[in-house]
Image (cartoon, rainbow, N blue to C red; front, side):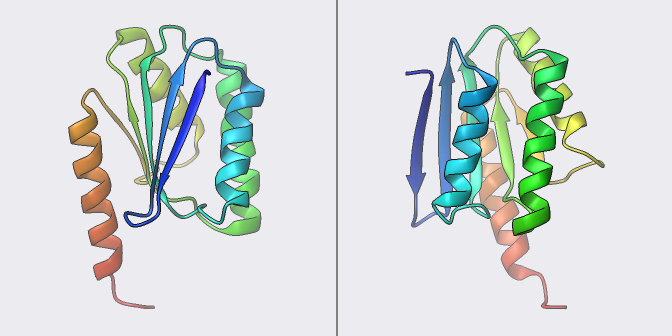
Length: 133
């Protein structure tokens, strides 16, 4: 299965592990599921370490546009930490980060799953500590 989707309700986090081949349809379905499951604001650890071929620029743009359209209806998505080790996939993750719009502090790229988890934990903690506006 190209996409493993594992929610952790207690931590308000979803771990999504991709393996090849992954299609744009499958990627958008995973995001649609996140929204349908009521987990749109959960943090996501997107593990790309088993993928060697990044999406095309057109698919990265389409995927980012799909997420922006959902965010217009449901508000901002939770933080996303992408993990890749292959240099081509790291570059692909950076392309996606760019297409996600504005410099987005909610999206980051890592080479280590542990670093990604720590960043998500810190992101969650910082957002819980923000005073209500």
